[in-house]
Image 1: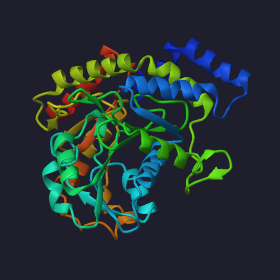
Image 2 (image 1 turned 30 degrees about the horizontal axis):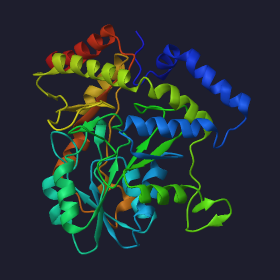
Image 3 (image 1 turned 90 degrees about the horizontal axis):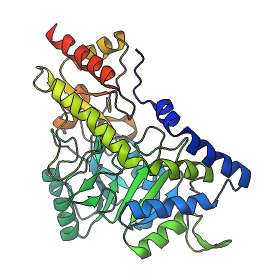
Length: 368
């Protein structure tokens, strides 16, 4: 049987008529930039997220950069972030001349270790960026308490967690600003690049919108330095369709995750994903901790099962961030995770037959 890491084709076929109609409508209108579908999508996503302000942009990395710009951070300001994350989180911090300050992560949830944050705060610290990794939220209440006490800003990197909730609040709507990505493989993905910035602060929303649009409210009247970052109409039209199915997609991912949990729990050498009590999990990835991880990956590949390592090099050990990083051994959990994490196929089209084959293959590797 053919097993895909992410089956975008199968997902498309289920809603093909709606997607094709949405695309054709944009082609017919020829309003490829700032068409009505963009406004429709931001309004629909706002409603989904409990009426938070939503500003669409070109991708998730831009969303992070625009968020940092809107907070008025200055070169040299320090921003705290987890060491186990995709480097885009640190990338935008460095691009703006800010200083990334890495922190270790929790061994169970893989999210930022809240107990490590306060010792990283200095007089130059201005923001904390909790990353809601793999589909569940970081522990936001103590993070917000620290931020309030030290007068810091919080920017949620919710690129992998759209639809998840933390104590009934939607991921991305809890801190000062939230950011997300609509990269095709995301739980809510378009057919190219896309992203959004989220906030409950109306004034901040206005500033974010200006920055994303060349720093202007009125055309040719530029009030601040901005960037050119927009979600094109075609992608917005596709997202309008897929947003209607997002809760169904999350349910299917959780069903697949529960199947994995039941089959793999108790297998020596395997640690199944922990589920935080204060957050739902939307399983952007189903990520194991595995002994002999690299050998397992090779074995799975030989049996026709894809898997991916997210992420093989901790952010603080990436050459790009060497000046701001700490030496090897500084963040033991992040460094150990880099040697053990392995993500199994996770998407909306997984069948019971496929799940059974994947699980039995993993088990056969460890039990012989």
